[in-house]
Image 1 (spheres, rainbow, N blue to C red):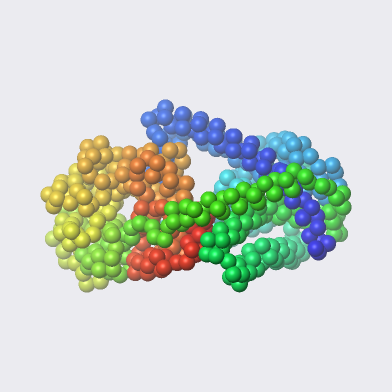
Image 2: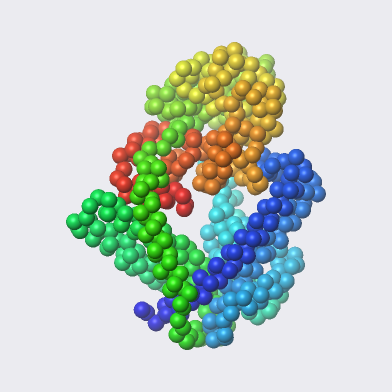
Length: 582
């Protein structure tokens, strides 16, 4: 083993011990936080706060208290997720006696330096900006934070927004680079936030070239080391399995075992990634302060009977799990999922947006449903339109609420007439389910009442689902027209979202985790995912337990679904496991 990697390898037992203890403590806090938050929401008559009503947080005392609890949680995460790792790394560099409990206590105490306006800004940067930039360290609470795909696409397609977003990224990235060692200054040198920021800036300006070189080399070495582990533990054994004269049953059990071992390795690697990176950062911090390379102090060789015993027990458990999973293979790894494909805005890429032609194109491709958007005209009719005006689709800046149906009839989308809601229903009847979004400024209770009336007049209660980003409208329809299917669309939430009053929950693709899908099904509701256009994303959700996938690329989604039906056992296992863990 390379000498430079030895300190990191020797630190693994300590890292695992630390991760187990902190994850248990944080898990207890999250459970309590969830209970407190749910109690506060219940006192207001709510079960969740979603992207459709976040203003609640700034309008009630319960909302302010939830925000305060969130901020407290952020500091707890920084104390255990980052500061404690820095303390452990410092002890490894200086050769101090290592105690995880004492390190956690020191990390927790160091958080008091952040309890000031500057400190709160640092905490918010770590929690919100760093994960969005994908640069620097962030807490596990928000490391999956993202810009919703539909917002990112709008930014990418609008030059002004793209310029502003790029400028913001450069500014925040510059701030992040300059403050790379701010937590080290606070935790190790006991500096104030201002002093630690100034010190970090000086260290980075003097050593940025070395930092880039050291970091890139370190990452390459770590990736190479992981590659060797994967090669030895997974790829070579898999090749040997294909050569050995084994029965199909034994071969499948051993294949499952190898897949489980791969999952275990991935989990261990994910637990080690940030601590190991912080170890390297701490070493560089000491080196830059001293002006010459500083290496980790030599550690005494220790025996780790608990770790060895745990590893042996885990291996036995994996063998038992492999045998059980083989016996329940088709249930655990089904060859086909009944996830419905739903065309976005009529027919997605296959037809003109929000037109009868688009709906017919979706049906011809085999789509289960078609998602459309309706808005009210000046004379009370309902036409299909996604945007606030007709400029993008028909070259007319006027809004639908300022125009009569007769005026709108003179417009077209790629040569196709703009249909009314009734015309869309007639075109889809007996062919395809219409997921109709109540859209725009005219999306109100009158629109809900009128839409229900039109659906009933066409006897399409079973072939139409009314959806909206406005929860109050969906709740109104559920309360007054329970016979009508409804769906609430959202891209962010917390609380018991699955208990919201609707038939479908529609989550933006990054929010539609396996846990969210399972929780929704437990409440006897269905899950829609929007708007997955990339092949890998489509594959992911078509392998999941989602009920419907809204996409612009219908043809590709149909092809992916067909490919999934022809997979090997190994592919079925890998796809399903990747769906669960990602």
